[in-house]
Length: 286
Image 1 (cartoon, one colour):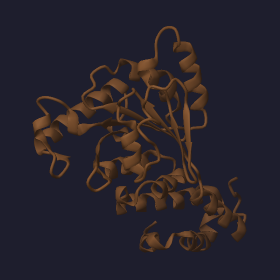
Image 2 (image 1 turned 180 degrees about the vertical axis):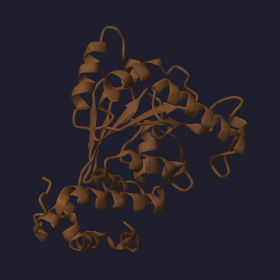
Image 3 (image 1 turned 90 degrees about the vertical axis):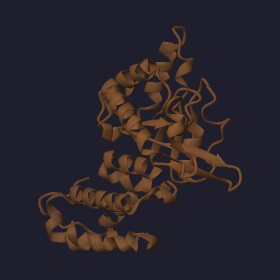
Image 4 (image 1 turned 90 degrees about the horizontal axis):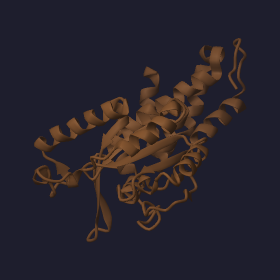
């Protein structure tokens, strides 16, 4: 629904629209070869054990759904299971299950050189849908890029040294060319579970979330920032998500926006979680 011809929108309709965006439940596909680090990435990203190693990334030949209150994660079979005998069946299953997915996270280990199966699936199933369903290619396990790069990983701070950063950028540019995909859809990360602290150490998950929010449609940005662990969401990303809500409200209101934008602003501000009240300072610039 888009309000047109300067028709004055009701407060109820605006509140309902904002509530719909605030409560939107995204479907996120988790894809890639078995052993790509899907489980640890998902757990570190969301800050809790939403999956276990035996749940995600075990080479299952079925699609597994992990349905939570605010998000649905869909784990796809590892591409290593794809062969001539089951290729048609796999591709049909992928196509059907991806039909209503909002975001695909395609995970590739940083030391993986055999990307042809990944590229083939992306070209056939994901690339044609990238306007509706953005695909984020994630280079995982940056702490395990292999010789000679391993020595350039700072394990104390759990991050790459300057020398390794250059190698990471080169790998991202290589995948950009192979997938015919802008580097804004490619992110490099690392995660590791610390048995002593019972928590995940991570590198660049906040950068990943920032990129995800930047490529999602305006009305879907907030839901991702709501669901991931707070430590993985920067202030910049929070603002981008709220601006997405603001822009989606403008599109919803159409021609009526100019005459009712103050009412719309008040409704959006009133819907903000208390922890995000500081964002209201940005509204006057939008």
